[in-house]
Image (cartoon, rainbow, N blue to C red):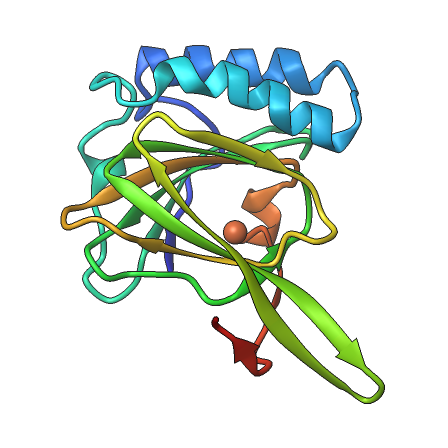
Amino acid sequence: MTTTAPRAATAACTRRLRDLVEEIRETVERGLPPELTAYLVGERLAPHLGADDLLTAEQCEGDPDHYRQHLLHAESDGSFSLVALVWLPGQRTSIHDHLSWCTTGVHLGEEGERRYRLISDGNTARLVATEDVVNRQGTVCGFAPPGDIHRVRNSGTGTAISLHVYGADLARLGSSIRRVYRLPADER
Ligand SMILES: [Fe+2]
């Protein structure tokens, strides 16, 4: 994954993106539990998905080597960050989980998500695939750790773009990923 990182939503951002950041801020500032915050942020994110005035052309650029993360906004108090992930055909993440609550929304194309459960058996551990989900343009998901182990891929034939909101400061952390899992996985 490669990352581009303006600190905050400034000159390169569209008016719609600035509005979205303000809506997310209003929701996060309520100080609600993580799962509920993720859900309510999804309600604010959904109406903007697919709008052609949301992102600049630069924020839609991919990378032929990896899916690409554009940091769109990092709140100055570290309470949330907003990124656009751009996936060219065939690109995918590692199996991972997250540091914080997360809300995702598909802006363009479609993404496939495989969810896993971590099975611990004495001194050994393995992953078991539990669910496959296809998220098409306009779909939002909200979740909070623990139990959020998954892998995401571009499951369509063209470019896919999704917006992700995390309850973490990605300007400082770089990524919301808590852990990458390299355990044996039962893929069903
Ligand atoms: Fe993830």
